[in-house]
Image (cartoon, rainbow, N blue to C red; front, side, top):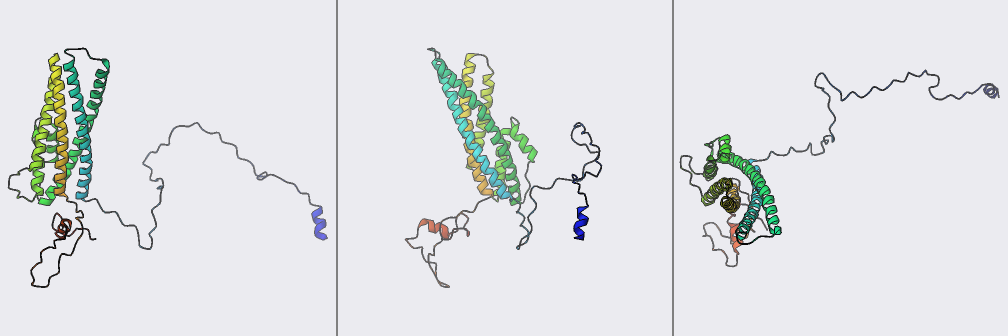
Length: 320
């Protein structure tokens, strides 16, 4: 009862929060003055998007191994082969387009031509004439990258040093005149070093390298002749330029296909990839001192290749 009489004489007043505390004056917002500027390089940085994983029961994650030169060469060769194949297709289409245009020129000598075939021929020649050079330049750049890695790997395998520097090979492959000899000589040197031939012997290019060399020189010479003939103003010069462009496109397609062959050949020579060669089979059991038995007649040729160890004669066949 005493507590109730005391509480009955108390006056309760409800106030909002922070009503008794004086308010601070409101600051006016300054206009935007641009991004912040620092007198020196800040030492703070943003936190990474994903934090590093914590080590588990097996310890921290293993560091990924560095890419070996063989793997890098095979990856570069794979992309180069695809680019060269696309270049060969575009060059073949360009040759057909130029041949069709030459046929229209011959037909126009005796009769007038309709506008439809002429417009389609011009559109096709223009389109392929833009795509084919772009793909050819991309293929050439990838070829120089592959050649650089192939020369380095061949030097490592043979324990020698390349006769030409990388700069000399790149300039010799681009400049008119030296580009007829430097790329083919570089391929011959790579093949010579990768084959284990003595460094003092003269390189003798194999058939794929010789074919590529001839196709490359023919495409370069015919391309230059087509461009020079196209500078003429006469009607005969323009007709000859169309025919030379068709022949040059055929030579470019052949050179691109030869690039596919020679790149696959040298890549397999420098960085052979072990592939399964069938299944291993037990051909016979002999004791010590007994001659080796003849293979069973029912054994297939695939089993025989597997028993010999594949291309290199080593272990690498798939076990069935």
